[in-house]
Image (cartoon, rainbow, N blue to C red):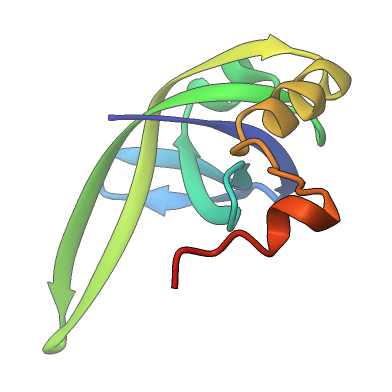
Amino acid sequence: MELTGTVIALLPEVNGQGKNGTWRKQEFILEIPSQYPKKVCISLWGDKIDQADLNINDSVTASIDIESREYNSRWYTEVKAWKVDKSGAAAPSSSNAGSALPPVTTFSEDESDDLPF
């Protein structure tokens, strides 16, 4: 699955020690443009953090996997990016986001009274 949008926040990198060695994780918030924009928290793990080299306002396409796991009878869902492609600067994406919205129809006074009911 792929999500395309603008990076609006970079959360601090977290690292630790596990049974397989050290690990690194960084999460970022991707805003997906639409009539009602959605925000998705996406995780990057290990070397993918350096490969993505994300900055706030980057326009990106993230290839993701969604995974849920159970712990103590509660379920936790994580959105993991396995590839992140930058599509350009934020300025072009904001102009493209505006064109993705449906066109606005305007009526003159005469046409607005022509309702069929």
